[in-house]
Amino acid sequence: MNTPAAAIPDFSRNDGLLPAIAQDADTGQVLMLAYMNAAAFAETVRTGRAVYWSRSRGRLWRKGEESGHVQQVRQILVDCDADTILLRVTQQGAACHEGFRSCFFRELGPDGPRLIAERLADPADIYRQAARHDAAAGS
Image 1 (tube, rainbow, N blue to C red):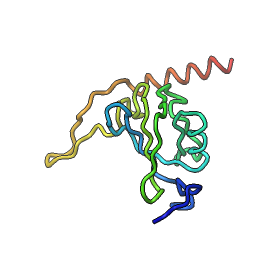
Image 2: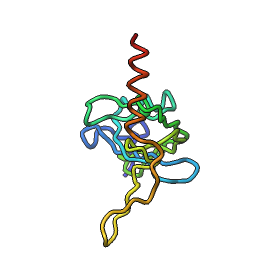
Image 3: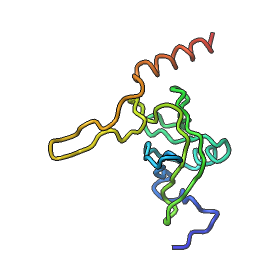
Image 4: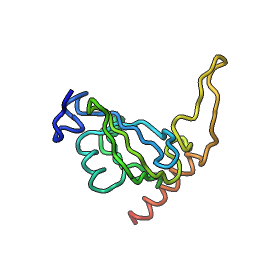
């Protein structure tokens, strides 16, 4: 399939939401999977910081806006069908909202799931600090 360069990535597919994989640029570890629309992609390219579309909030989600755990984008790759985005990033802090470096911290085996990573931070602490910071900024 030949996709014109102007249509890469091709946001005409999948109702305008494309999967975006964040990968540690140094280690190759997969950190998370999120979704991007054209606006999130454009802001990511413009700022060099990962921006996604939050399906639950129905708005742009600037990674780290609440937690401080931002992703600096070092490289953007698009797959052969132009419908999946790979961001090679430098991750500050935990990528996962549950406080793990990667969202992929559970391994499934014959005996069920087991943790294969250590939690870097307690999510309650991360988001409590963010709420205090927001409150202080608003006063």
